[in-house]
Amino acid sequence: MVRLGVHVSVAGGVDRAVSRAREKGCDAFQIFSSNPRGWRSNPIPDESAKRFLAQLKQSGLSPAVDHMPYLPNLASAKEEVYAKSLQALARELERCQTLGIPYLVTHLGSHLGAGPENGLARIVAALQTVFSEYDGDTVLLLENSAGTKNSMGSTFSDIAAVLESLPSERRRLGVCLDTCHLHAAGYDLRTPRALQATLDQFQDCIGLELLMLIHLNDCRGAIGSHLDRHEHIGLGKIGVEGFRAILCHPALVDLAMILETPVDARRDDRGNLEVARRLASGIK
Image 1 (spheres, rainbow, N blue to C red):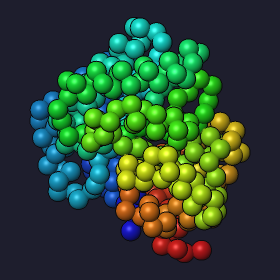
Image 2 (tube, one colour):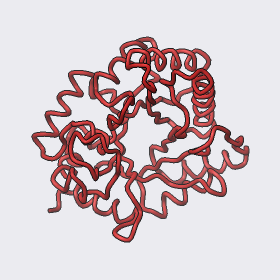
Image 3 (cartoon, helix red, strand yellow):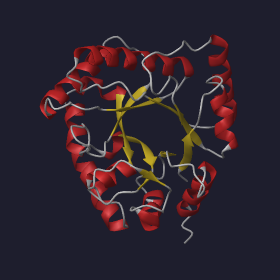
Image 4 (cartoon, rainbow, N blue to C red):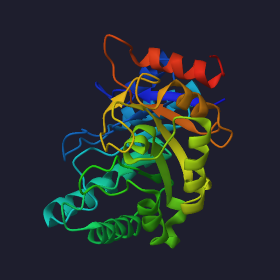
Protein backbone atom coordinates (compact mmCIF):
# COMPACT_ATOMS: atom_id res chain seq x y z
CA MET A 1 0.00 0.00 0.00
CA VAL A 2 1.21 3.47 -0.87
CA ARG A 3 2.55 5.57 2.02
CA LEU A 4 0.71 8.89 2.32
CA GLY A 5 1.54 12.06 4.19
CA VAL A 6 1.28 15.84 4.23
CA HIS A 7 3.50 18.86 4.79
CA VAL A 8 3.62 19.69 8.51
CA SER A 9 4.76 22.75 10.44
CA VAL A 10 7.96 22.95 12.49
CA ALA A 11 6.73 25.96 14.49
CA GLY A 12 8.15 25.81 18.00
CA GLY A 13 10.94 23.43 16.99
CA VAL A 14 11.65 20.86 14.31
CA ASP A 15 11.09 18.03 16.80
CA ARG A 16 7.38 18.91 16.91
CA ALA A 17 6.91 17.86 13.28
CA VAL A 18 6.79 14.13 14.05
CA SER A 19 3.92 14.36 16.53
CA ARG A 20 2.03 16.66 14.19
CA ALA A 21 2.41 14.16 11.36
CA ARG A 22 1.15 11.36 13.59
CA GLU A 23 -1.83 13.44 14.72
CA LYS A 24 -2.83 13.97 11.08
CA GLY A 25 -2.65 10.24 10.38
CA CYS A 26 0.41 10.29 8.14
CA ASP A 27 2.61 7.40 7.02
CA ALA A 28 5.27 9.87 5.82
CA PHE A 29 5.66 13.65 6.04
CA GLN A 30 7.41 16.70 4.65
CA ILE A 31 8.79 19.81 6.35
CA PHE A 32 10.61 23.05 5.73
CA SER A 33 13.56 22.80 8.11
CA SER A 34 14.33 26.48 7.41
CA ASN A 35 12.24 29.61 6.97
CA PRO A 36 10.55 28.91 3.61
CA ARG A 37 10.38 32.60 2.68
CA GLY A 38 13.77 33.82 3.87
CA TRP A 39 17.48 33.38 3.24
CA ARG A 40 18.56 32.94 6.83
CA SER A 41 18.01 29.86 8.96
CA ASN A 42 18.65 29.42 12.64
CA PRO A 43 20.88 26.50 13.62
CA ILE A 44 18.99 23.41 14.75
CA PRO A 45 19.62 23.01 18.51
CA ASP A 46 21.31 19.73 19.37
CA GLU A 47 18.54 18.70 21.76
CA SER A 48 15.86 19.44 19.18
CA ALA A 49 17.69 17.33 16.59
CA LYS A 50 18.07 14.46 19.07
CA ARG A 51 14.37 14.56 19.93
CA PHE A 52 13.45 14.63 16.22
CA LEU A 53 15.63 11.58 15.52
CA ALA A 54 14.29 9.65 18.51
CA GLN A 55 10.66 10.46 17.78
CA LEU A 56 11.06 9.65 14.09
CA LYS A 57 12.55 6.23 14.89
CA GLN A 58 9.81 5.48 17.40
CA SER A 59 7.00 6.68 15.14
CA GLY A 60 7.64 4.37 12.20
CA LEU A 61 6.92 7.25 9.81
CA SER A 62 8.96 6.96 6.63
CA PRO A 63 10.27 8.79 4.81
CA ALA A 64 10.70 12.21 6.36
CA VAL A 65 11.23 14.70 3.53
CA ASP A 66 12.67 18.21 3.62
CA HIS A 67 11.82 20.88 1.04
CA MET A 68 14.07 23.73 -0.03
CA PRO A 69 12.89 27.28 0.79
CA TYR A 70 11.27 29.31 -1.98
CA LEU A 71 13.87 32.06 -2.51
CA PRO A 72 16.87 30.03 -3.78
CA ASN A 73 17.11 29.86 -7.58
CA LEU A 74 19.70 27.43 -8.93
CA ALA A 75 19.15 28.69 -12.49
CA SER A 76 19.48 32.39 -11.68
CA ALA A 77 21.54 34.65 -13.92
CA LYS A 78 21.92 37.10 -11.01
CA GLU A 79 25.25 36.45 -9.32
CA GLU A 80 24.22 37.47 -5.81
CA VAL A 81 21.07 35.34 -5.86
CA TYR A 82 22.98 32.44 -7.40
CA ALA A 83 25.70 32.52 -4.73
CA LYS A 84 23.13 32.68 -1.94
CA SER A 85 21.20 29.82 -3.56
CA LEU A 86 24.26 27.56 -3.52
CA GLN A 87 24.85 28.39 0.13
CA ALA A 88 21.20 27.65 0.94
CA LEU A 89 21.32 24.28 -0.81
CA ALA A 90 24.55 23.26 0.92
CA ARG A 91 23.15 24.33 4.29
CA GLU A 92 19.88 22.46 3.72
CA LEU A 93 21.68 19.24 2.82
CA GLU A 94 23.65 19.50 6.06
CA ARG A 95 20.45 20.07 8.04
CA CYS A 96 18.98 16.95 6.46
CA GLN A 97 22.07 15.01 7.50
CA THR A 98 21.69 16.29 11.08
CA LEU A 99 18.05 15.17 11.15
CA GLY A 100 18.54 11.85 9.37
CA ILE A 101 16.26 12.95 6.52
CA PRO A 102 16.83 10.89 3.35
CA TYR A 103 15.29 13.24 0.76
CA LEU A 104 15.57 16.97 0.04
CA VAL A 105 13.22 18.32 -2.66
CA THR A 106 14.28 21.29 -4.77
CA HIS A 107 12.77 23.24 -7.62
CA LEU A 108 15.13 23.87 -10.53
CA GLY A 109 14.34 27.58 -10.61
CA SER A 110 13.97 30.21 -13.33
CA HIS A 111 16.46 31.33 -15.95
CA LEU A 112 14.93 34.84 -15.67
CA GLY A 113 14.99 35.35 -19.42
CA ALA A 114 18.60 34.26 -19.97
CA GLY A 115 17.37 31.17 -21.84
CA PRO A 116 16.96 27.47 -20.99
CA GLU A 117 20.52 26.56 -22.04
CA ASN A 118 21.96 29.14 -19.67
CA GLY A 119 19.58 27.98 -16.96
CA LEU A 120 20.69 24.37 -17.40
CA ALA A 121 24.36 25.35 -17.23
CA ARG A 122 23.76 27.25 -13.99
CA ILE A 123 21.87 24.35 -12.39
CA VAL A 124 24.51 21.79 -13.32
CA ALA A 125 27.34 24.02 -12.09
CA ALA A 126 25.48 24.64 -8.83
CA LEU A 127 24.99 20.95 -8.15
CA GLN A 128 28.59 20.14 -9.04
CA THR A 129 29.83 22.80 -6.63
CA VAL A 130 27.60 21.75 -3.75
CA PHE A 131 28.16 18.02 -4.18
CA SER A 132 31.94 18.50 -4.33
CA GLU A 133 31.80 19.57 -0.68
CA TYR A 134 29.01 17.28 0.59
CA ASP A 135 29.59 13.70 1.67
CA GLY A 136 26.25 12.93 3.34
CA ASP A 137 23.56 10.41 2.43
CA THR A 138 20.63 12.70 1.64
CA VAL A 139 19.37 12.38 -1.94
CA LEU A 140 18.42 15.60 -3.74
CA LEU A 141 15.12 15.21 -5.57
CA LEU A 142 14.54 17.43 -8.60
CA GLU A 143 10.90 18.52 -8.74
CA ASN A 144 9.11 19.18 -12.02
CA SER A 145 7.55 22.60 -12.58
CA ALA A 146 4.21 23.70 -14.01
CA GLY A 147 5.80 25.48 -16.96
CA THR A 148 5.33 29.07 -15.88
CA LYS A 149 7.35 31.67 -17.82
CA ASN A 150 11.13 31.09 -17.71
CA SER A 151 10.82 28.14 -15.29
CA MET A 152 13.12 25.15 -15.59
CA GLY A 153 12.06 21.52 -15.22
CA SER A 154 8.59 21.52 -16.73
CA THR A 155 9.39 18.69 -19.14
CA PHE A 156 10.94 15.28 -18.57
CA SER A 157 13.65 16.21 -21.05
CA ASP A 158 14.53 19.27 -18.91
CA ILE A 159 15.08 17.06 -15.87
CA ALA A 160 16.87 14.40 -17.91
CA ALA A 161 19.31 17.04 -19.20
CA VAL A 162 20.35 17.86 -15.61
CA LEU A 163 20.76 14.21 -14.68
CA GLU A 164 22.69 13.36 -17.85
CA SER A 165 25.08 16.26 -17.17
CA LEU A 166 25.97 14.80 -13.77
CA PRO A 167 26.67 11.10 -14.36
CA SER A 168 29.09 10.87 -11.45
CA GLU A 169 26.44 12.18 -9.02
CA ARG A 170 23.63 9.75 -9.84
CA ARG A 171 23.60 8.26 -6.33
CA ARG A 172 22.87 11.72 -4.93
CA LEU A 173 20.01 12.58 -7.33
CA GLY A 174 16.44 11.50 -7.91
CA VAL A 175 13.11 12.92 -9.07
CA CYS A 176 9.98 14.13 -7.30
CA LEU A 177 6.94 14.41 -9.57
CA ASP A 178 4.21 16.85 -8.59
CA THR A 179 0.89 15.79 -10.13
CA CYS A 180 -0.51 19.34 -10.24
CA HIS A 181 2.62 20.54 -12.02
CA LEU A 182 2.51 17.61 -14.45
CA HIS A 183 -1.08 18.37 -15.41
CA ALA A 184 -0.42 22.11 -15.73
CA ALA A 185 2.62 21.39 -17.92
CA GLY A 186 0.54 19.24 -20.29
CA TYR A 187 1.13 15.68 -19.06
CA ASP A 188 -2.18 13.79 -18.89
CA LEU A 189 -2.97 11.80 -15.73
CA ARG A 190 -6.77 11.82 -15.94
CA THR A 191 -7.35 8.18 -16.94
CA PRO A 192 -5.45 4.91 -16.49
CA ARG A 193 -4.48 4.94 -20.17
CA ALA A 194 -3.30 8.56 -20.05
CA LEU A 195 -1.31 7.92 -16.87
CA GLN A 196 0.39 4.92 -18.43
CA ALA A 197 1.37 6.95 -21.48
CA THR A 198 2.87 9.64 -19.24
CA LEU A 199 4.78 7.07 -17.17
CA ASP A 200 6.04 5.47 -20.39
CA GLN A 201 7.41 8.87 -21.42
CA PHE A 202 9.10 9.23 -18.04
CA GLN A 203 10.61 5.77 -18.32
CA ASP A 204 11.94 6.46 -21.81
CA CYS A 205 13.36 9.87 -20.88
CA ILE A 206 14.56 9.41 -17.29
CA GLY A 207 13.81 5.94 -15.93
CA LEU A 208 11.29 5.00 -13.24
CA GLU A 209 14.11 3.84 -10.96
CA LEU A 210 14.91 7.53 -10.37
CA LEU A 211 11.35 8.42 -9.35
CA MET A 212 11.53 8.48 -5.55
CA LEU A 213 8.63 10.67 -4.39
CA ILE A 214 5.24 11.97 -5.54
CA HIS A 215 3.69 15.30 -4.55
CA LEU A 216 0.02 14.35 -4.76
CA ASN A 217 -2.03 17.43 -5.67
CA ASP A 218 -5.03 18.06 -7.86
CA CYS A 219 -4.91 21.10 -10.17
CA ARG A 220 -7.33 24.01 -10.53
CA GLY A 221 -6.21 24.79 -14.08
CA ALA A 222 -6.86 23.02 -17.36
CA ILE A 223 -4.27 20.62 -18.74
CA GLY A 224 -1.40 22.53 -20.29
CA SER A 225 -2.51 25.80 -18.66
CA HIS A 226 0.80 26.27 -16.77
CA LEU A 227 -1.34 27.30 -13.79
CA ASP A 228 0.34 26.20 -10.56
CA ARG A 229 -2.69 26.15 -8.27
CA HIS A 230 -3.16 23.11 -6.07
CA GLU A 231 -6.62 21.70 -5.40
CA HIS A 232 -8.16 19.07 -3.12
CA ILE A 233 -7.75 15.47 -4.29
CA GLY A 234 -10.42 14.68 -6.88
CA LEU A 235 -11.96 18.16 -6.92
CA GLY A 236 -9.72 19.63 -9.61
CA LYS A 237 -9.09 18.96 -13.27
CA ILE A 238 -7.18 15.69 -12.75
CA GLY A 239 -10.21 14.25 -11.00
CA VAL A 240 -11.17 11.13 -9.08
CA GLU A 241 -10.45 8.67 -11.90
CA GLY A 242 -6.97 10.07 -12.36
CA PHE A 243 -6.06 9.86 -8.69
CA ARG A 244 -7.43 6.34 -8.37
CA ALA A 245 -5.18 5.37 -11.30
CA ILE A 246 -2.15 7.07 -9.72
CA LEU A 247 -2.69 5.59 -6.27
CA CYS A 248 -3.24 2.07 -7.61
CA HIS A 249 -0.59 1.95 -10.36
CA PRO A 250 1.86 -0.91 -9.73
CA ALA A 251 4.87 1.26 -10.62
CA LEU A 252 3.89 3.84 -8.00
CA VAL A 253 2.41 1.95 -5.05
CA ASP A 254 5.75 1.51 -3.29
CA LEU A 255 6.47 5.25 -3.33
CA ALA A 256 5.67 7.79 -0.65
CA MET A 257 3.18 10.44 -1.74
CA ILE A 258 3.06 13.80 0.03
CA LEU A 259 -0.09 15.92 -0.25
CA GLU A 260 0.32 19.70 -0.50
CA THR A 261 -3.39 20.37 -0.84
CA PRO A 262 -5.34 23.40 0.45
CA VAL A 263 -6.81 23.64 3.93
CA ASP A 264 -10.18 25.39 3.78
CA ALA A 265 -13.86 24.99 4.63
CA ARG A 266 -14.20 22.09 2.21
CA ARG A 267 -11.41 19.86 3.55
CA ASP A 268 -8.38 19.79 5.80
CA ASP A 269 -5.25 17.64 5.55
CA ARG A 270 -6.88 14.67 7.26
CA GLY A 271 -9.83 14.88 4.89
CA ASN A 272 -7.58 14.75 1.82
CA LEU A 273 -5.62 11.84 3.31
CA GLU A 274 -8.88 9.97 3.85
CA VAL A 275 -9.95 10.54 0.24
CA ALA A 276 -6.54 9.43 -1.06
CA ARG A 277 -6.61 6.27 1.07
CA ARG A 278 -10.09 5.43 -0.11
CA LEU A 279 -9.00 5.78 -3.74
CA ALA A 280 -5.85 3.75 -3.07
CA SER A 281 -8.01 0.93 -1.75
CA GLY A 282 -9.96 0.89 -5.02
CA ILE A 283 -13.22 2.02 -3.43
CA LYS A 284 -15.48 3.84 -5.87
